[in-house]
Structures are given as structure tokens and as C-alpha cells.
Length: 118
Image 1 (cartoon, rainbow, N blue to C red):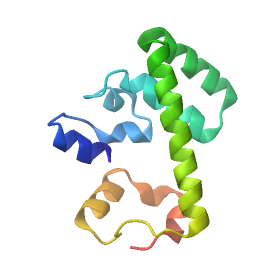
Image 2 (cartoon, rainbow, N blue to C red):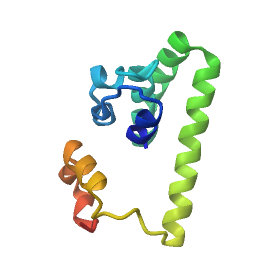
Image 3 (tube, one colour):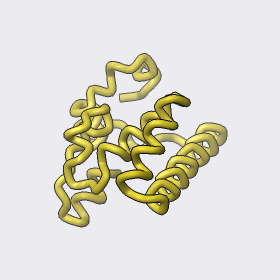
């Protein structure tokens, strides 16, 4: 979705920020590195990392950005759980865009990739 929204707004981004690449996260995304570190801490449930990234994000971006980031993270957690529990299928795994993103991000390196079609 980052790539699609960046294309729509004609903003340069580097999706490798998703993989923890701090310099990539800063390309085209204001507070990108701090947002990426916050998201990583939320996703991995790293309490110490969450406290540190929350403080850093609030310090550089302000309380409003921190609150928005927390809201987005909570919403994604909710949506994924609902979709998983209902058995909603993922997007077409055979699409060129899907294959390209999986390859560029090396998503096959994750153990759960063995359960992915395509």
C-alpha cells in the first residue's frame, strides 16, 4: 500500500524501510525512521523497544503524530485479526505487483512464507 499511495501522490519512497532499513524508511516519509522503529516495536511486542521508540517519536514528531501512529497500528492489528478469523483470502498472489514486492522485500525468508500461495 505504501508503494501504491506513493505512486498516486508522486512521492519517492523506498519500501525497504519495511525491512528495518533506517535510511530507506526516511525516503519520502516524514519521521520515517522513527515511525518504522515504532511500528517494529509494536509488531514484535518489544516492550523496551516500544518505550524507546515511543519517546523518540514523540520527541521528534510531537504527541499528535505519536497518537496517530498508535491508532494506525491498533487499527491494522484489528483488521488483520478480523480478516484472519473470517478466512478472508489475501490479494491475488500471482499478480506481477505482488511477486515484485515479495521479491524486493525478500519475504520468502520468513518461516510463514511456506504457508503462502504463489
